[in-house]
Length: 459
Image 1 (cartoon, rainbow, N blue to C red):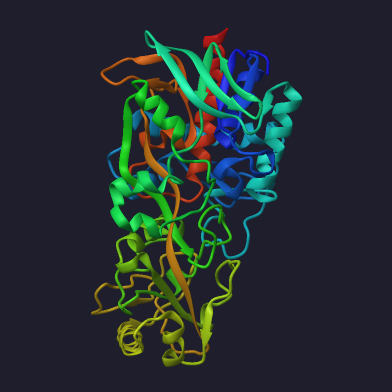
Image 2: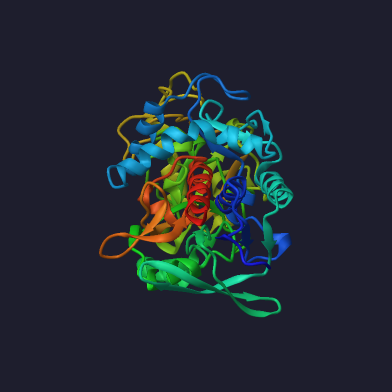
């Protein structure tokens, strides 16, 4: 590998956007990806779409304004994040699809069963794997040096500037001295020991939806070098996943979207939260945390024949039975408790105009917790259940950055030549909650900006 002007650490969407943007600005660029080539792409390879502001975009419906995206984001994440960076990513999300498209990415209409995303999110043709493949192809065509199985093991800093980066390669260790560095190596979601500092023994039952390489190594190196922490150490984007899936790299196919169409019970057969609180893309990431707080970190999505075709199918079939007494033993849930919960729920349902595309008026009355929307009685066999655990996607503790994506220093100031993009700096915008597709928005917007700023500095 030749000594580059800009070294990009990471191999997902944020890293690729940074590498391409820096190269298009005239800098020589090297991208080091810790994973082997066949596992390249980080969490991005498991994605499907990107959330973006638009007026009337192809393959999307209606209009999605800056103010509406800001309102949606505020509703799930509150007042904690950096307001300037939040506004920046919202406004620049409008240009994100065009940037990706100019670098080879193609689009498709929303998939059936994706629940209310057609207006707010734009879907990658072929999904995240196709996106990653196209961006790698473009990067290499532009002359970006791509190195797989390369792990960053040291980041040396002197006087507020990165002086060298130590890299372990298949052929041994090497020291690089780039003029600028972009850290885009993800969070620490695959580091269960680190998660256990904040979640205790519950972390031993977590699943990691994405890249096993995202263990926070680069984040730890930056923090040890004096980078400022930013975000919520206990916060993460975590969803309900099928516990029969793999511990790591489960991706999108272990995600279960039946939750708002039925009820959720814990291992004692009791409901514990409002399944119809809001539109699913605004609340699906709530369920990972909620399950993490339940006994044994397990829960069950219970539904009947009426809703089986209203959500995306998963890789594994649900448990099925012709009656609740027959279903309960398959789950290890007390039958009497499950039956009482379903009967109590059914009695509380108030009929309305059922419509999964909006906040409808099918609700419960006199039930705690309530089900605010999409409440249908569970009374039409066969009955179904998915066993669900906490599937962590990425973490919300990272490094602080300024509006040029320069990494902030603990105690004040910034590193002159160190930039960050994607999940490693997500805590600047996300502290809790999540909006579907917003991680790809963060990666694209801040990756592009980091690459441009790094190239400017290197020039």
